[in-house]
Length: 193
Image (cartoon, rainbow, N blue to C red):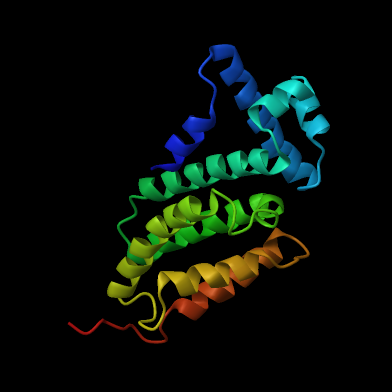
């Protein structure tokens, strides 16, 4: 099932209830980015322009709201990955990874709270790897990524890098550039046929 479908399952059917659901989701995205994962549900309801009871009717727990925010964000990230039409394999992979880094930077407060036991963990992980695997493989086949590196290696290092504390975005992007340099072969390689 797609991430869009998983999120759609959670959306109410009535138009006014859907508007409230979407308003809460939008307010939560901004509140988490601005104030972190500890922001109160009352603050999110206030920002959404709905009552606390309306918020809890749609999202019975703080984790349920975080899961919905994360599902929507990963769905957007995956749609970006699916839309990459860059013919150069390295550039396509680089575009995806830089977008992923920006995603992790803004969603880090949520990611740190959600665990492998979350109902959205497996579907979102699978969707992310569904984009990363072919991009890494294509770049590897073109000799642009080391033959001993696979998508899991790349994603784990990117997860680790984005989890660090940085002075500013420039320092984060410098660390990502080191990772990108590290996955490239010193001399062009071609896989054995």
